[in-house]
Length: 119
Image (cartoon, rainbow, N blue to C red; front, side, top):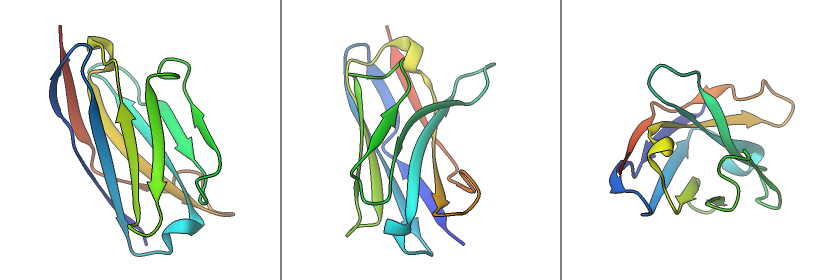
């Protein structure tokens, strides 16, 4: 069982930056692909970014490509989401999720961290 805890959310002005962190425990971190999702009020949860266990490949939603960067430090059991050029449209609760090789996609979820971008 993997536990995930997000941090780093907050209030930022449009054009600003934030870095989210997601600390994992309870498993061999490098065996898990990690993803970031977000959910804005009244909207469905949407995919933001994903990174494989080794960190060698990453994938992004079109809406964040070129502005957000996902990375991981397997020595620290932590995945990051660097968010630049933020807009009010990025306001949402951000969740990290994990899935093991051969396991259920995004089987484990954190509790979320709020990101609010003011105009």
